[in-house]
Image (cartoon, rainbow, N blue to C red; front, side, top):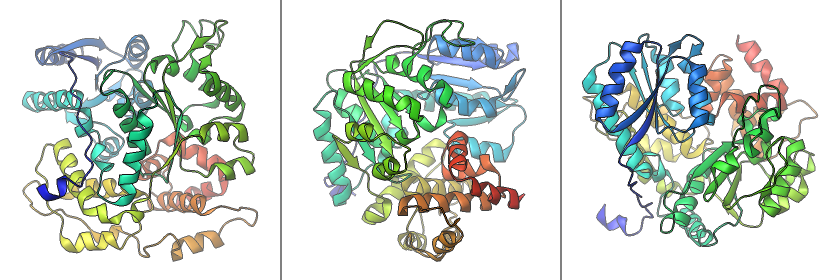
Amino acid sequence: MMERASAIYVLANFVSNQNYFSCLIVDDDAGFASMLQKIVEQEGGRVVFCASLKAARAEIQRAGFDLVVLDNRLPDGTGYEFHSELERLCPSSVVVMVTGVPELSQAVELTRNGLFDYLTKPLNVADFDACLRRVRQRLNHPDRLSGAAELMGDSPAIREVIHTLTQLARHANSTVLLLGETGTGKDLAARMLHRLAHAQRSPEAPYVPLNCSAVPAEMFEAELFGSEKGAYTGAEKRREGLIAGAEGGTLFLDEITETPMPQQAKLLRFLDSHEYRPLGGNALRQFAGRVVAATNRTLTDEVRHGRFREDLMFRLSVATVRLPPLREHMSDLELLTQNLLAQLGEKYGRRKPSLRPADLAAMRDYHFPGNVRELRNLLERALLRTPESAAVLAFDSTWLSSGGSPDTTAISKSRAALPPDRQLNALELQEYCLIQEALRSEDGGIRRAAARLGITHQALMRRLEKWPELRHTAARSN
């Protein structure tokens, strides 16, 4: 292993000098919340307490939080539903759920979607203490636990990506476009570019991600540029946008092709001048930072079909980085698998089981349409089925579909089943088939299918609006 280390690109850890962390506790049981507060404060946290989701939203708008401890059943909603909202409101927060009514399927879905830990009432204080220690590790060493090892390898394809990112990091505020299929690690590449650019001169510079498909079209401008009081119905106070939050750092616009057409012109003007005006405001503001955009689509096809502006495509395409699909660097499979199992073992507080050679061989014969994200989900699914005392991962190779290349029988059948006027390129067809298969596997459950695909519910709904015939898959399943 030491011999390989010199040939492997490993992302460095940048340790925060922060001696405390901010924590928001959302629970309508004041006594229980008070107990949690004492434990968190002993661990070095500064606590704000809310008894409702409405109050929590107000606090999050006032200030971000490193940690959110969330009850599930609250007077005005559920923590389960609020978790997806937290991804947009405070994407960098660590979220822990503590519930008196545990549901295994819910726990699995939430952890797949980024929940850090899922604890039950009555609370075992030792378990909560251990959870807080892992939270501190996450906050102090974000790279080690956030999945950065997924963007590593000694294959020529990954070496080229990291070399290019290193070169681009030297040009402080240049716009960068990341291209690649779903699950190839575009967010990881954006984070790496940010760290490389700011490691020496400004390690605390903000990194602010926005999934363009997760924001309603009518709220896109306010979310990005901010808004003044009274700018729209319900705007009771001035609100800073994500651009202001990314000042001096990096703004990451994921799924850029999902930007509503009316807003693309404003986004183009912002990229040209780095100037913007909050919704309802008069004064122009200047943005000093980098914009990184990403898409899994072919921009020329999006332009040809009238879904994306050609001038915006040219503006974004100055510096591009292509993230290779996993099937193009399968020599990294064993390394990725070992690192992902180590991360997952640490996430669940258990030792890392080994993978049978036969299972690894089966993976090598699989084309992984969902790429590294699909690999991680498969390993996590297997780990949750593996007894803690077991030394070998309970992996089921039947989870891997037959075929082994994008031109499989299943995809051919799906192409034949397309409406006559539906023309898709190879990447769109692959995405179409993945959504169709996920809906069938989850008996038409749209939220479960989104979780299976590793995307948000809103992102899947946008694709169903684009391909309405896929809704029939859900209807027939039900």
